[in-house]
Every structure is written in structure tokens, then in C-alpha cells.
Length: 258
Image 1 (cartoon, rainbow, N blue to C red):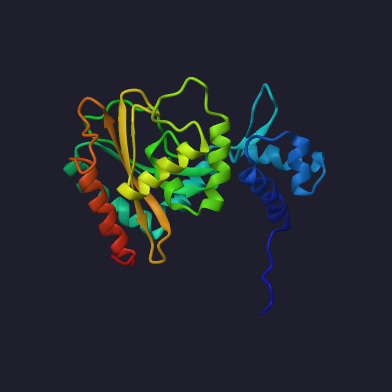
Image 2: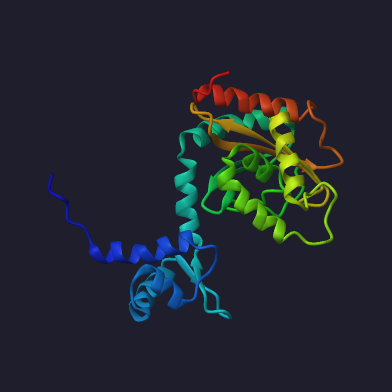
């Protein structure tokens, strides 16, 4: 079959976006251009246009480049079209009415567990979380859920990196060693959900229940969070039980054997 004609400059420019997407953080022009296989001058011309489109932003003080708000919108729009996310979004409203607390959906993105949908309860407290936020693996219910069910070879390097960055002054329920992290993740698998109480956000308790596909891979996490004073933190309680039941039903609908 004859290959269809395209616009070569678009394909070349995308190389810069692809490098930023795979990078651990913002990049200097020379590093970005080098990784994309082009000169700094050529890369700069593309980056000027990408900045106008808000696909890329440049920090005024460090001069480093990173993905911009338009890139985030494209990524979130793509993630929201995943079959499992669409099904979960259709059901999350009734689940929120049953639980009475804010719910969110998270998927595994290129930088970790990422919030892709937010359904806020009318009684919710203001929480400093946004769509597109990447959650830590060990101090968030979402991160614990994904870290427990994703392949160990993919997760352990990230867990070790997070442990290395853990401050000396920490909460007792946040692991400080690899052995403690393994015990915690084993408990998540035993309980069937991740939970934190005042660990990531002071005064906030959260659960995250996994949703699996037909092959047994974690597709997304359903997150419930609320103020610790009115949020039931108990396993099998008023939040944990219906949350895990909803995740179980969605997994079954995606073909996961029950």
C-alpha cells in the first residue's frame, strides 16, 4: 500500500514533544535538541511555535522547557477516552451519592498514577489536587494501589527513588525502607485497596480501589477522599466497602474473572 503524504515539519517537530514527554523533568535547549537529533537553532524555532500554542512552556529563571497546558489537555482528553475510564465516569456520580465524599479516577501515566477525573462532593473541603496531578507511590492511597498491583520490575525502581527522597521527619505510616514498603504493598493486596490517613494531605483520609481488565492488569483506580473527621477510615466500613464493590463490578464488566 502506498504511503500517504504528510507534513514532514510536523513530524520533525513532534520529536521535541516526544523527548519532553519521556523526560523526568524540564530540559535545557541544548539537551532537548540533542535528544531530538537536531540543532539548537532548529529546535528553538519549533519551540517558539509550540509556546504560542501552549504545547510547551519555558521557565523564565532557569530557561528550561517543559510540556505546557495544551499538552496536558490533549493527554487528559486521550486518557478520558479509555474504555474503562468512560465506564467509570458514567457510574461515579451514583457512587458519590452513596459514599457522600469526593471521588476521583486515576490511571497509570508516563510519570506515575495520574488523576484524570474529579467528582467533587458538595460537602467537600478544598483539596489542593488537580486533574493531571501525579500521585506519590508510598504516601497516597492512589500510589499505593498502583504500586501494589503493577509488575514489580516496573515499580521497584520508582519506589527506591521515592524512598531516597523521603524526608527524615516523616509520618509513622509512610515507609522509610524497602522492607517496609514491601510489607505495606502486601497489605494493600491483602485488603484489596490502598488507604492513607493524614499521610499525604493533613486532615484528609483516602481509599483507592483497583479496577482490572480481562487479563488481570490494573486499568485504573477509583479514589474516595474526604475530611478525616467525617470520613470512615475503617476497612469494610461505609467508604471502603461500597468503593471496592463498585471497582469489583467494573472489573467484571471489563472481562476480569470473578
